[in-house]
Length: 146
Image (cartoon, rainbow, N blue to C red; front, side, top):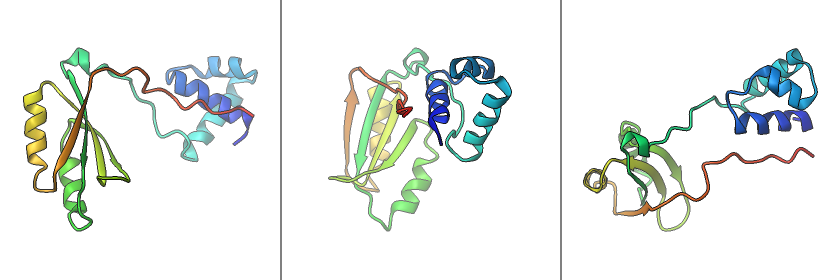
């Protein structure tokens, strides 16, 4: 990974739909060279995919919440199996602190969120925080080009 690869990653993080031609122009290289570099970044796992930044609120999902739960090591496989089938869970992280897992979820209303929390009781007590606003993010990690 060199300076040019980091610059390409920064461009793609900003705009996943940027054309190879525009990336090449911004990096002062040929389009075929940019294409090869992008392919190499994909092949080596630096680029996991290209996704749309969807506005869930416009779709009626007005509640964004972070749910923490302390799941025992023994129950973790069952928990992961369950949670992977819940479409409203958009992120699941193993964390340190007073819980072992933090979920990021979107729901249309508080009743749905409450029902989801109730469904987690078999795995442990939940601690839920509802986001009022998101001031920053999601945003790309701007990689230093040096």
